[in-house]
Length: 84
Image 1 (spheres, rainbow, N blue to C red):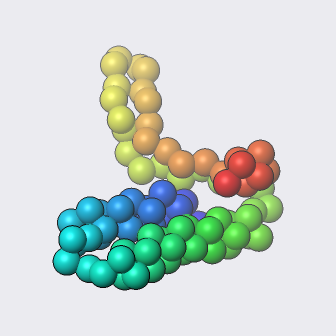
Image 2 (image 1 turned 90 degrees about the vertical axis):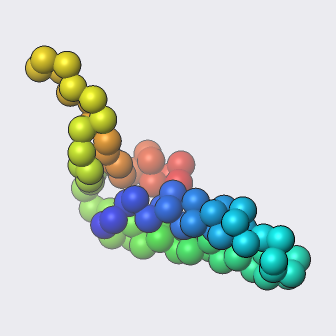
């Protein structure tokens, strides 16, 4: 389901506007910000429609100490879909 795209679209919009914002017109900066939010919302709807059971996507280990591991994961279930 590629849940990482939900926060990635607004982050990409922030980076584009943060780096190139002074070179763009106000209209372009606004279009980039709105497009980033809309793309993220569209991806949330795609996840929400295809969510039959809880999904956990594991992208790696954030840190580990002995048998204790904290992963870098994204999860989607019915409650998180409502919150999204």
